[in-house]
Amino acid sequence: MRKDRILITGGSGFIGTNLVQYFLDKNLTLINVDIRQPLNCAHGPCWVQGDVLDGSWMERLFFDFQPTAVIHMAARTDIAEKKSLDGYRVNTQGTENILGCIKKTPSVRRVIITSSMLVCRLGYKPMSDEDYMPANLYGQSKVLMEQIVRKFGLPCTWLIIRPTTIWGPWNTRYRDEFLAVLQKGYYLHPGNKSVIKTFGYVGNVVYQIHQFLNLPDEDVHGRTFYVGDSPIDFRKWVEKFSEGLNEKKVRIVPTWFLRCIAFAGDVMVSLGIPFPLTTFRLMIMITPQILDVDATIKITGSPPYTMDEGVHMTIEWLRKY
Image 1 (cartoon, one colour):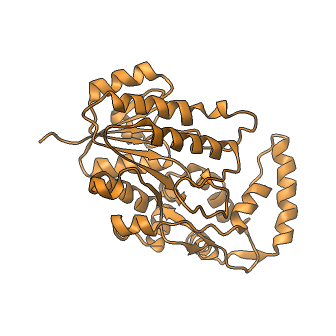
Image 2 (cartoon, helix red, strand yellow):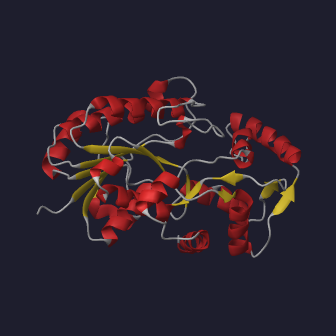
Image 3 (cartoon, one colour):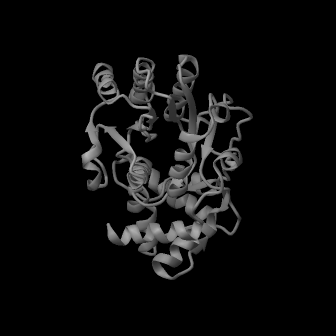
């Protein structure tokens, strides 16, 4: 029986870095196709520099590697683009190029396409896989991407995953923004109201992705799954990190006070000056976001890591890197 060969696009990013390490630890054969070099320099030997927008080059790579599974994660993930969907061509045209390569490669048996929870605005709970309400161009690009996948007619088993708010080692944005502010003692938490959110420790997410590669076709084909952990109280999660980094409780302040700071942050950012809090980031903090990960946990099994374990491993990574 032929050994599995996994092709990952976008494996140099946050989730991708953890996924590549997970597969390497299991001695699986893989390549990471990414325009950027890996965050973890130890992953250099399995990295191939390439652009998913270069369809002809991608076809040659697929032909040479002959993957049995494809995990497509390459994407532009920021929300900075305000003018045109063309700024997110890697999410739409790039995905279409990958699908075309898959269609021409008979060895591929399983495909996982990575979308985003932002196909719906924060706080909106979709009633079906195709119930969309994006709030920005990034979200719109991911809606188009999902629609392209569903209409493409892939000849193999495929599924779409939507990561929830994922945290853990190798998340450099969290490291440089949220965790840096928390570690310096500058973090202020908005009010005492409980805000329930669907987060996901990255170790649990890569476990779920691996499970999706091996589940029966009939359990996953053509379906969309949120990946992450069961919903948690956002404040409890913040406090775990605060205690682990500083051995202190977080400071609670009125939400109206943070709105004033966030407004000032908007002005600073508009002038090109980095600022840790903006109106958008505050909205993320105070808006409940409960997503349906039960279907995922039901078929992939209980996640292997608790929140406490995830926090501990993330702090260990911060201290090491």
